[in-house]
Image 1 (cartoon, helix red, strand yellow):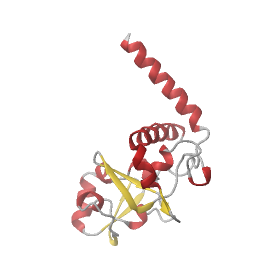
Image 2 (image 1 turned 180 degrees about the vertical axis):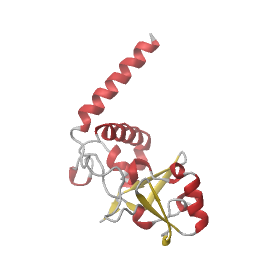
Image 3 (image 1 turned 90 degrees about the horizontal axis):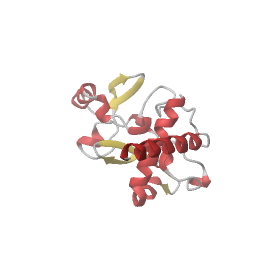
Length: 168
């Protein structure tokens, strides 16, 4: 009986997520949120979020390319840490706004639908040793909107990210 219930929940989640994905914004955007030169995080060092819990601008002098994406680091030590374990330091959702993916329909800026949205690399949160980034511009700080309903937002964001990337 437990297996049947689990299967029914899984099927309903997949059906909901597939129906949901047709209304998502920017789903055809590249997998990684990068600029025109392939730079991630606007040049912020991905390891510094974990080492010092802050967004710190990296340097072109200490750069590394991983999976076609360029990352800047503040020093060679941080670059080495990333090279040893890139998955540990890379932002979730390809570096797109976590709230943008996890928000409920009709709750975005100007009632935009959920999807892939840009971020301010200085607005972030580490959750379960994973880096999540958020949009923060023109008086809209989506990290603050995210916090009160973090568990549900994170669940929806993960489900949508999975569906989006099955289609790409």
